[in-house]
Length: 108
Image (cartoon, rainbow, N blue to C red; front, side):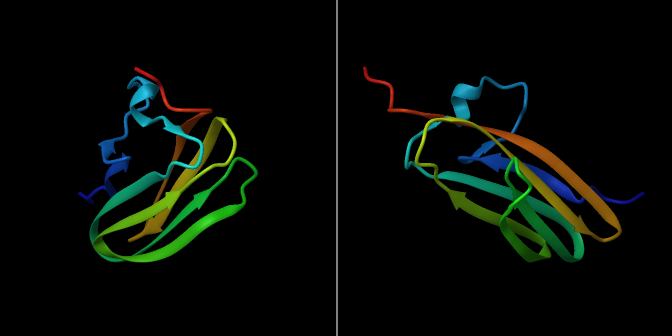
């Protein structure tokens, strides 16, 4: 039985779960989102982040086992969908990530 290519995805140091309250992952304008993918197995994994228009934001080759890390910021508020994809060891993986950007931080 083959191991899973990706062990875990983290956003802002929290394990990503699409059913979790999105408040956990929210950031204000110009505040960095930290996206991490932890890889299992052996060999090299090509990891790519793409925006909703399929433009490449970041692409790196990672030696597995290892971690892909990328930080990005947005200058305007809104919801962004970023696709994390990985390919290696004869496996492919893709996951859409929802990133909420607030106009300003909550007060209080």
